[in-house]
Length: 265
Image (cartoon, rainbow, N blue to C red; front, side, top):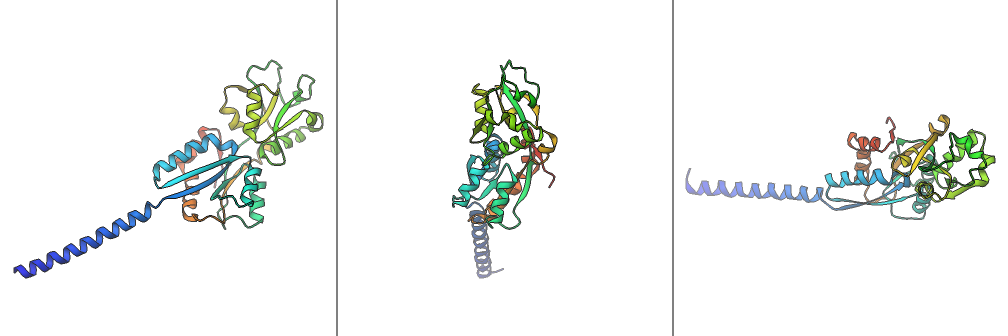
């Protein structure tokens, strides 16, 4: 092969390599484009989601997750009022139903993720000797912390438990309505109340309370945490991948470690 042919061949090869490298660089740049996801999650998910979000961002360095924890009713209102939200994880179906009826959820993005149960707890040093929910009607119990049923799913389920047991009217005047389920837990931990109703998962993260009883099975069977992508998101693809991760085996193991039960999708 003469020198001119060699030079032409080398030139063509160099051009092809340059194009290939540029293409790969472009793909890499596209894949690593920075994205911030605003994730609104029920207060009872605070601890487990911090760990799961850490796992996700560790595997996806271009993604930043900005969490917002609170009562599901409060988060629902914030979304309705236009707060920037990409993904919503509610502790109750009612709040998600409301957003869906207002066409605020991305089509077909809603899925049931977790289950939980409500339990009756008392301070770990309690000497009242409560053995079940019926003990709440006794004169020794004057204050019972519960999430506000109007906006806190745990409170709504707690109220249903008391109604199912036929004691709601007897203890209604004793109820201390709290802003979210973690507020209930804090009241019990601090001894501000004699008892409280929280989720099983909230009880499990505390060393300052003890469980007295579980809510009626009929009530606990209805507790579900749905998740959905919000219609107004500007990051639908990234939000969808994040939601998919919540259903992965890796995330599932973490949820179970914190006491949640996975919904069979």
